[in-house]
Length: 241
Image 1 (tube, rainbow, N blue to C red):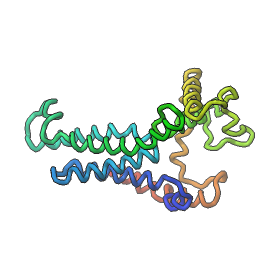
Image 2 (cartoon, rainbow, N blue to C red):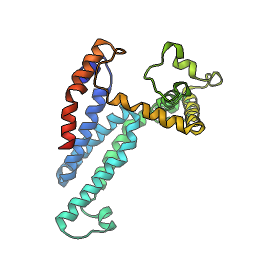
Image 3 (tube, rainbow, N blue to C red):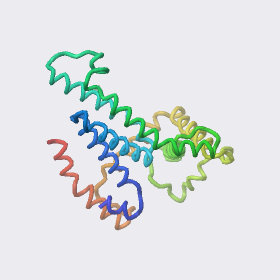
């Protein structure tokens, strides 16, 4: 139900999740493929990862771990097939080392990001990879106004998100403001790390909420109970299995 709801609301979650699933499926196929299909699968994985990064810049952090998994599996499969101990030289330069696939995947992701980076440089005169949402989200998400209990949406008595931005920073351009807010957000943690830990822990129950809430509208309640609430037992059974 959430996928249907988000699609109708023109959100990017379904496209982002589809890109991730496509990339994971391609990597699984790439693990066992022969030389003939390797280039085609690497192109598909690179495109899927590129789309995922364009939709969520944070996914860039996961790409090295996905490639590391591919290298580890290729090495493991080769060692199992050869039934002999293999050293670092074989991992890096052996016949199963996925140098070509990794280069194609990384190259495609870079090519898909590059036009946006060039556009940002022409607009702001400084390096900006894709977007500036990280600093804003980090500043707002860890602001002392929450205390130790996070709220998904500020209540009216707490003011607006714009009100939280210090007056002396409001004249900065978008990238400069994003960097300044990131520094302020990090300073919140340095000033009171205990509050930050408690605030972070307070976010966790939301991820496991499967029951209706008076704070949510009817459509949201139906979506939550009919999606997560309905499938939670099957998810738990699948994890145990």
